[in-house]
Image (tube, rainbow, N blue to C red; front, side, top):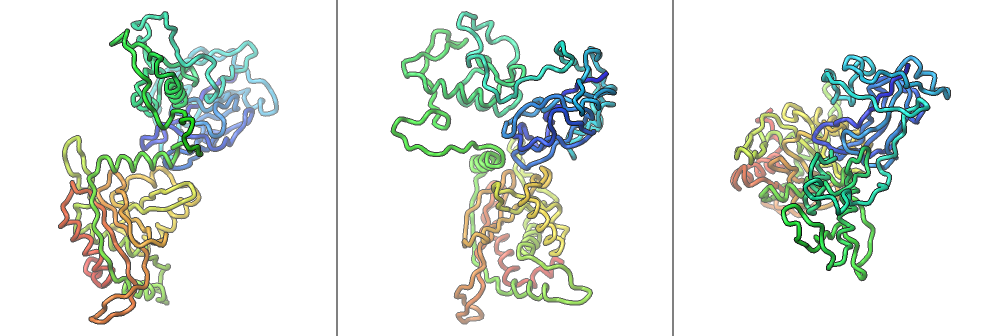
Amino acid sequence: MAQVLEFKLPDLGEGLTEATIVSWLVSVGDVVAVDQPVVEVETAKAMVEVPCPYGGVVTARFGDEGAELPVGAALLTVAVGAESAGTAHGGAVSVASAPPLESAAQEKSSGSGNVLVGYGTSAAPARRRRVRPTVATGVPERREPRHAEPPAPTRAVPAAVPVEERVAGPVAVISPLVRRLAREHGLDLRELTGSGRDGLILRSDVERAVAERSAMPATTAAPATAAAPTATAAPVATPALAEPAPHAPQGHRTPLRGIRGAIADKLSRSRTEIPDATCWVDADATELLHARAAMNAATGPSAGPKISVLALFARICTAALARYPELNATVDMARREIVRLDQVHLGFAAQTERGLVVPVVRDAHTRGAESLSAEFARLTDKARTGTLTPGELTGGTFTLNNYGVFGVDGSTPIINHPEAAMLGVGRIAAKPWVHEGELAVRQVVQLSLTFDHRVCDGGTAGGFLRYVADCVEQPAVLLRTL
């Protein structure tokens, strides 16, 4: 007899708490193999294919394309067993005789336990889980999609129920983002009815409650609270979610989700937590370009792949960080410590159709110009196709930002939290320059360093930037560190 197992959205790692369904790779009735990708989702860091740890027949899917699901929400159900293969041709799945409980060993034998490459559950903890009841036809009851509108009103508890009874019991919330949104707007989650599976409260439920409260007349009393049963309060102003004023300008609203939402959160956190400062200098990059041209023009057995300008700046960065390790650090405010890091994992800003991403070159301090060029090319290609993994987008210790590709000379970039510094490189352009005592046309670049003033003072930051400029103007300076 077949057994119906529920596959939930797994923890995708790196602190991610939700994902958006991009496309389903299977349909109801399809036969899936163990570890076969069943859905493509977009997280705040990348798009990934999620493999199912069970092999059998898909009996239900939860969530349409574009729906946002929290970690732990049901994705689909799979009928596993001797008879499951027959359903691929229209046969019914029989689950009426499935045992009421299944052991951890039975569950492990039904699938691989791997929920995502790199984030598997190679040793699933022993547990017992209850199989959900089935309908009389022997086919598992299909639940409504998570995005469906809730049939009940927003207020979960009638007014006649005492406050003491209303606040008892746990709140059906998984996502910490939902809790934070409710806390910011002063909402009591116990008063909401969730539209998700089993009454799970989603972000849309909180946003709906905030919008309804904002639309209430100013004279309408707010719900009583346990601390002050008779007190009333005016609705809290929520410009981001409230209905616009009658004469306010109208426009298109874009939700801050996925990569755009992650960028907003990270940059806001950086500006809030890091006291940054910026210094900059112009440098004559003529000799650096000549050195690159000579390297790329070399022939013979020793000639290698072409070297990019970004790779040369990266090699200069790693040499400068070896001299000024204070900038390859992070700040632990909980322990009030500056943590100086031993490895240089170099991030670089890459603009894609889906937004700005920062892939990370691991152990950049151990790589030469050729290796850096190859890794930059590989990660840039993956960034453009949206196939970067969470591990390739996190863990950076210093960022190189080449905004010169946009045709601009200077910038004051925001530090990529929790790093301590970022080097910005403007465009290399022909400009008048005093060279060897005479006015000449040279290839000039503006370099800027934005740094966390908690980890060092201006002397260290200035010394780092001056060393970078010296290497740009005289590439032979790098030979001392090779």
